[in-house]
Length: 224
Length: 319
Image 1 (cartoon, chains in turn cyan, green):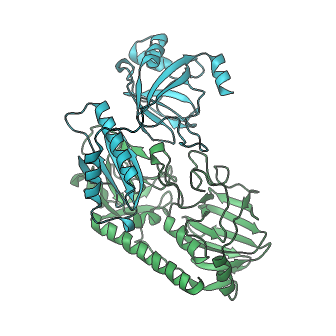
Image 2: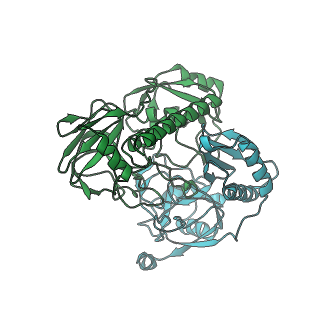
Image 3: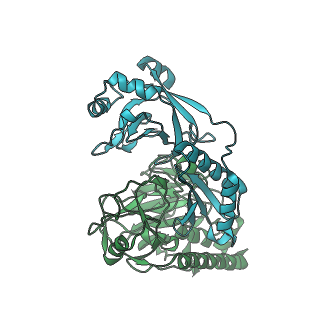
């Protein structure tokens, strides 16, 4: 465990070691984040996690003197318990040409046919490593190796909400319209970020995700 | 009751102290780019310190009131008038029914306007702050437009007592004003700091690039090559983080920043100086001064103590 400061009002704790594989590491990271959040230490205002690390944000004026030690102890006690079962979420995707803006680019890079790309993308099991970049955007680990394709050379100024995309070893879904540089393979009719619901995101870190191919007609039905 | 936006200025938004506890959903803390300015302006007029107010950037903002209110403002160099009366920074002013107020930047920068009762837009995810990037919160998730009618909240009893103490149009008391160190921002080392990169960061004066916004200030200067080209695993970033993308042009993240990032974190602007960073506009010059983590934390504790003292003084006088 390595603790660094993240500015003057946060700590970032890296849990990577030589033993864990990425999924074991993610389980420990999620468990550590949950344990710290549940402890409700005085002064802690936010806890978040990513692939290898947990970040703890605090109000300095309310912090106890032994704060860092307590964080260490909480992480040591966290183990790999994850409350509840990790959910499996299926995301319907229409891979039709009008949505699959970069299917040809990915085909050129990988020498795979568009059908083979879609088959690979929709048969893999992904894990939500973290949510970030924008509200509800899932960083998905588990992209089949042949689909690893670099980002676009120059990002698009506008990517539509629901765009299902890949970049390097990662897969993701744009919950909102935004600029973006990932390769867009299709579009889901699902809303990944809903401000009036609790939790506000469809996916949570640790969830398993599958993409399921749907037709344009099914897409329209879902949208309603 | 409402306040009418006659002229919306440019990128004027409803902001409060932002959203806490939602980073795991990718939701930025957001809120006023200089929360301390907004908090002081709110305290002055008897509001709770994180009540929603307006963040003004540039252009001329004109508002018309339809009932009696008091207001205060803080931030950069702005001229604020209620009718013909000039309202100095961090003073309270009375606004009568049908009065017009005008907020005009004298130079570039940002200002925060607090109105008694606050801007009463619906709370979304625990805050009234506008998230311009994700288009939610504030007034319809966007910057104000001419003709908007913003709902105002009910004034507290404290607001009414403060109003009664204002003999003329403008109060004869004010809040403490915290002044920055010109174009110098104090920084502490980030986890990817190395001395050769750090020296290049400290040795030059940068210019704020045009494509800067509430998420971050992009800096133009002599390129800083990162010590290592190794790709980093994405992890948490926070307002104040100075990232170094492969282009070699550093980015200072501001309150509206994303929650995680993969670029090296070479340094962090200290929290106490983030309000001064929020005043920087494209083409402004900026440089950095390195201090130690413990000093940054001590400065923040002192700043919070000064605000607490001011709050206690107001409560003793009006409470």
